[in-house]
Figure 1 (spheres, helix red, strand yellow):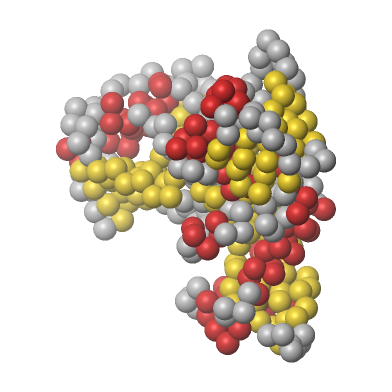
Figure 2: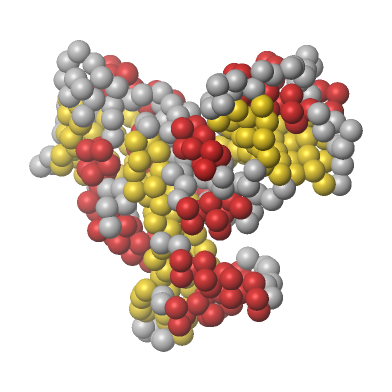
Length: 398
């Protein structure tokens, strides 16, 4: 491709037809004319930046950055969600996706998006560019005779639309308890939840009439698929399961997605249910210094100072030696130092390990065991003590 002209430019509405043509080919689906018009309306409405790679003025590859927010340690962070990465076969294996990714990293940094998430076609491919696994999908499969025991709950169950204000309020409280969940916007509820998580929606109200749980579920072909079961209390969890179990004459098997800290098996008489855990989304810190300024470390009696050596081959602003100063309050500053340090307390890792560590997917000592982090043990333990423990979870897809 050395003799060819490459241009990366932002796609506008006049490019949507070409973009959708490539997407349908690459992801192997077909839409009707009416469906394509709805998709174009969604593309125009949702906050996103679409990029195209042109080779000798021919449309060759594309990717989109969705402008999203994610919860980290209970706080919202601006995040760029990468989606729709596709290349026409005649332009594959020419490094176009790599160039798009590097271009998008620079743009996300300029936009203040300190994090980026994506769903990989292959984890190994995106790991080369700094993204790393940050959450898993856990799916339970239960036969009807394995369902939790039904109890008479004191609150009430009410049926509603998926985007009802009480559903949304419960979700935001629930999502803030995890790292890596989305702060869902009104458009996200419309296009991504209502349109995709089809079936029934119920809300559980406490005896005081407070909404404290909900479930999205669908019964089809003698199977129940629970898209989301969200509860803010044990009371709501038990009540929603009692409600779902009332459908036992309608299905033979139930599947439900859950976060990794879910304790459903301990609610069951027969705990030998099928559990499937699959690596899911990947995350990347786009701007390490800006991210750390916003990140709430665990409070401690004294200030902590550590030398961090980061490797980032695709974002030079993250590559080098840094000093990490964490205040007793948990506020921190990561500042680049002049050169490599020979201090024993220096901790070395790549940007992927750094991302997975601060999102809470793996601890520093676990990363050392995997040879993804190295340094003096005392320094690693001191760093680990300042990273709050919180489960990662993402019930959404993009």
